[in-house]
Image 1 (cartoon, rainbow, N blue to C red):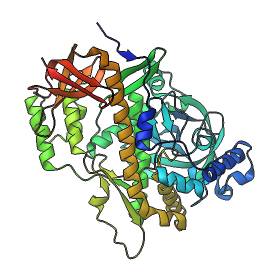
Image 2 (image 1 turned 45 degrees about the vertical axis):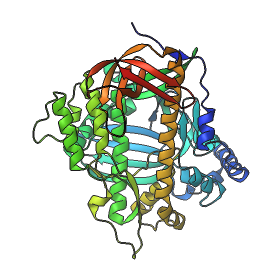
Image 3 (image 1 turned 135 degrees about the vertical axis):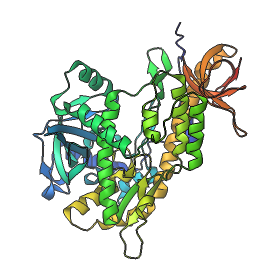
Image 4 (image 1 turned 180 degrees about the vertical axis):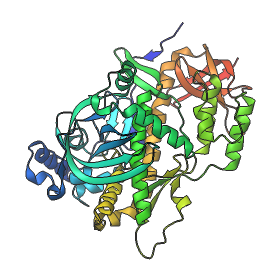
Length: 482
């Protein structure tokens, strides 16, 4: 029998205070945002500092695909079959057109680095007047964007890339579950009728180049009529298809910037051989056959989704992805461009850059400006050049902040929701064994909890565990094997 565990109220404000996250942007930055938003909403010519080069694609029926509650819509897509290949038009919110370079709002966004998400709402990188209104690609609104047009051949390779400023009008706001259901029923929106075939092709290409894609479900805290509930959200097919569009643009951006020797790359070093051998040992211990010559990515992609051992192996594979970083290429004659392997993202299997979420991530705005300059054959703007060397440190700190907020929120929810259940027993799957530094880690599917557990536990095993601690103040939950 499924036990629905929930709590009537959870206060996440303490985590925001602890992390120093708030919506105090400062009077000057907020005044800039409001003034720009008013100009955009009134369709004033002065709202667009790039009006002389902006193209009009409002006749193309773009759609957005996002979680149902999102309002900061960075991307809109239109994809068509082209012979045995595809033409992908990918519109990204043009945040640089809305923010004066090196002004008060620009400086405030550099201080923040990212939008930070909590179960009871987000703290945006930019004031909501921009991030959820004037800059967001909301349906039936004319919006400024940077348009990537990418031609993909039948073998999945890229044959042409164009990047330019445009304006579009999204015609529909879709979500992942709805797109997946529509695909299964054969009723996809015409603008993305080719998305499944494109996504599957690029996914196969990714595995062929050695990409590693983890498919762990997302642990979330969801507001309900009765309070808060822990949920587990498995990725839908549409998640994967849509991620391949974003990856395509990011890889094209990474290649453009690496070739030009200027820009901002997202990097990940190759997995250490010891980590790969540890994963192979875990596979053997769990009885998962890993044929010789099969890459990590193909092995993980072929695991059965309903086996406890798959969760353990996918979790263990996270150890292959250590050392993610950002690399600024300044384009200066004095700065030597790193060798290509040092610029790559090993889990993606190629050069890569963040350019598709400028409303939510600081670096995307600057990387996009570099790509626009490269493809137009013009110099990279001075304000971008000055910022590039400073961005990796800002973005590393922002990533840490976002991950900390997410984990702290889930830890708090687990402790509050389970605090009256100490002494109860639950069915669990062991994700990792104990080490000298930490106890074993387990996963409960009902309710969806990831926690520490004492006892002699082996990865992939099913176990019965008893809840021994659920402390709201320390945000800790602990179990022991029965």
